[in-house]
Amino acid sequence: MAVELQKRSAYAVAQKRFDEAADVLGLSEDERRLLRDVKRELTVHFPVRHEDGSVHLYTGFRVHHNINRGPAKGGLRYSPDLTLDLVKALAMLMTWKCAVVRIPFGGAKGGVVVDPRALTRGELEHVTRRYATEIALLLGPERDIPAPDLGTTPEVMAWIMDTMSMHAGHSVTASVTGKPVDVGGSEGRQEAAGRGVTYLTLEALKYLQVTEQPATVAVQGFGQVGRSAARLLHEAGLMVVAVSDSRGGVYNPTGLDLDALEEHRRFRGQISGFKKADDISNAELLELPVTVLVPAAIEDQITEQNAPRIRARLITEAANAAVTPEADAILADRDVFLIPDILANSGGVIVSYFEWVQDLQEFFWEEEEINTKLHHLITRAFYEVLHTSVNRRLDMRRAAYVLAVQRVANATNVRGIYP
Ligand code: GLU
Image 1 (tube, rainbow, N blue to C red):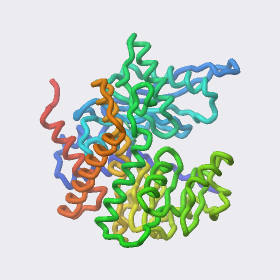
Image 2 (image 1 turned 90 degrees about the vertical axis):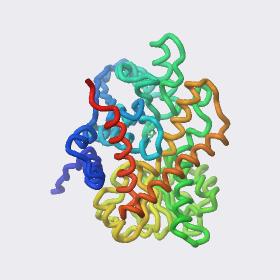
Image 3 (image 1 turned 135 degrees about the vertical axis):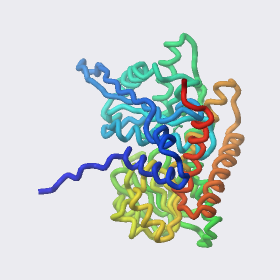
Image 4 (image 1 turned 30 degrees about the vertical axis):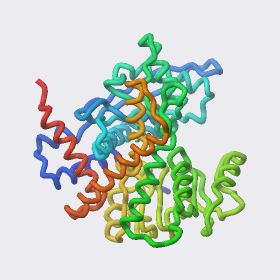
């Protein structure tokens, strides 16, 4: 009989990573106590009437990990597997992510336990508006600004912004980021995470002095982040040889025709079965002989099981927590260079910051300006992490954590404890 293994707590993993950084920094017990737990966790249960007349009870969360560097910031995830434990872990990652790239936000995360694909558009709107109302006590441009994450879209953000605006009696565009451009969204936000992945990958290849021409890439996950990363890496001159979605992937060692693949996916609703490539599983994709591996799907994809077989020279960890701590150690031993999640996918929240600033000042920038500013912030962060890594002899993840945790600890120390 198969034994179901108890899934490890994502929050415990996040705290372990924090503890390691705290050890390196020599933080006091008091400092640790202030940073290793979330500040607030709100769980809401709310009813929604479906189109067939039946009433369903939904559960949603919003968690603030730390708000000492600015308002709480972080995405909303719609997933049937969502748990408070995972939301707490992801909220903590947002605190470090904002700190490592030096944008003035704290960390938050939220979401609803729901499979958005199982709902009609109308039902999804009702779930969203009711959830937004339930967590509205935490939200606001100066307090907590949600954004898209797995399973949510710009349209979902527009509904949340509209709900907040209805309650306020006027438009509050800065209450949410990742909105459509028509309602105060920013140019470049949709592709921002993928663009950040691309800028960082190019910097890392330069640093590693990779000479393969062209360098090859495999991208796991074909959501907003994976898709734009694949396209932008291709435009930057790399050869994308494999991509996948949750059902499986395709591989062509001489390069994929991404336009034809998009066309195939629109038609078939999946990536597998694309004629000009071989079908592969998600597990196989991760072990391909490529220069760059971009896990852009979900957590816990590179583990102690498959880490010894990873053949990439560089991993750009686009999905939050795609690599486990045990895998980190194996990859470091094998000299695989890792750009850790809190840096790798920070392009999304960086352009969220730009969106929030544009909404607050009611003055909007051209896409070129946004991309230039994104490039500046993310490249600066890359070299700060790299220098910390080299100078303190830490792997890239530990270096990123040490920088981020130090900044949040500093903010906490200067502010002191109220009253
Ligand atoms: N959900 C994204 C993340 O995990 C974006 C968050 C944001 O833009 O606030 O970074």
